[in-house]
Image 1 (cartoon, rainbow, N blue to C red):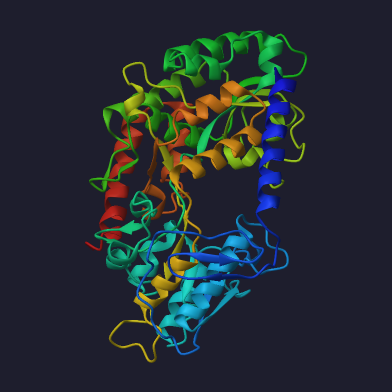
Image 2 (cartoon, rainbow, N blue to C red; image 1 turned 90 degrees about the vertical axis):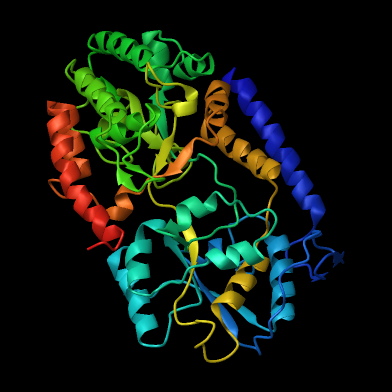
Amino acid sequence: MKILFRSMLLLTLVALTVLITACGKDGAKTTTTVASTTTTEAPTVTTTWEGNPAVNLQGEPIVIMCQIVAECDPFDENYVGKFQAEKQALQEHVEAKYNTEIQYTTFPTDAGWGPSRYNKIIQSVTSGAPLAHIYQLTTQWIPPLVQGNGIVPVTEFIQEYRHPLYDEKQNEFGKYLDEVYGFDSTWVLNDTAGLYYNMDLLEEIGLESPAELWNKGEWTFSAFRDMVLEAQTALDEKETKSYAIGGSWAQWAQNFIGANGGYLVNPYTTEIAFHSPVALEAVNFLHELHGHNVWEPNPAIDQGSPDWFDGNILFHFGEMWFNISKDRWGEGKLGFEVGYVPWPIGDDASLDDYRTPKMGQIMWFISGGYDEETAEGPVTSSAIFRVWNELQYYQTYEDRLTDFEITIMQAYDDPASVQANLSIIDKVYNELLFSVDSSWDADEWYIVAGQAVMNGDVNSKFTAMKQLYDGYLAAYKGEE
């Protein structure tokens, strides 16, 4: 089955490569009008969208500051993104239409990831010399950037100028209080955390595929408990000490809460929710399971401990990109096949209740300092958004879904895992807890949730933590 699946994937990718190659050549010039494209060699960029009203920017450049220029600039010689020729054609069209030049750059060396970056942006706006017009940032930094006037709301711009294929679900991730600040041109799909398992170890033990159990509607808390206990009994017979479960206790907790129909912070009421009955039930379930000595004693946050890499753990927290990226599990770093399954659903919950938290999303933001009424020159916030909007290559939902399916086929060498992942494609929400606070101190989420899974007393620990986070949330809302 694995060989057949790989062959199917290879044929699919070859067919796509031939199709893309046949469409055009890198560097070919394309002349684009608003509603149609006249092409010499490059791929056609055709749309029925009439575009946004033009603004003469009088030769002023629009500077886009991103994490890695080669991922953003379609004219970069090392470009690694998709749709290069199409984006080149769009950029040439935008530069002519708006009388501007698009410039891509990265962040200064003294603006590293974290507070130093968003503080640098705020300071530059305050000084009257913004670093750029558009920034690529994480949504976790929205509150301090808004409070420091480093970025501006785009709610009205999205309503007035958005492309017909703009996914309005993006607004849920780019929103802060009553305004939207972050925006993006892709569709929101569930590409975030899931449960990964060592397929070789599973086969050695002789257990049924968790992904197949999910696809049959049988992957519940109880089914997971039964499998973990059976697995641990078998693993205890191995010469090398092995465990059924690995990874950060807190990361398991936040995802089990979502699988049971709960939130850490309810995104619709902006109220703390990790103390709700369904949330407490999920964490108490993990604590009960922990008492059976099924968890590795020294789990690592994120990518995994040496025991995971050595093949001595059956189930582990992970994200889809881990299995592709050389910075995590990709390029043969794991010596075993990896399967994927969504988190088990609570015994009293259903698929309708299932949700996966997404903590921080990379989006685009417009710099402060270009207010419509006070900006010096033609470059205003509105013009900046329109330029960005017309630079984007928008896919239909169907095309984006096809791309996503190809990506997960590369990530999992298992058809059942692919099917399971596709079944929860829309089950994702913006988890605000980590925008409210970083949550790493001794009395905050990662530590307290971990202690609750290990040591119990979940209800009292979470009740005390709620009082702390109520204060954080008040500050987040600007109520203090």
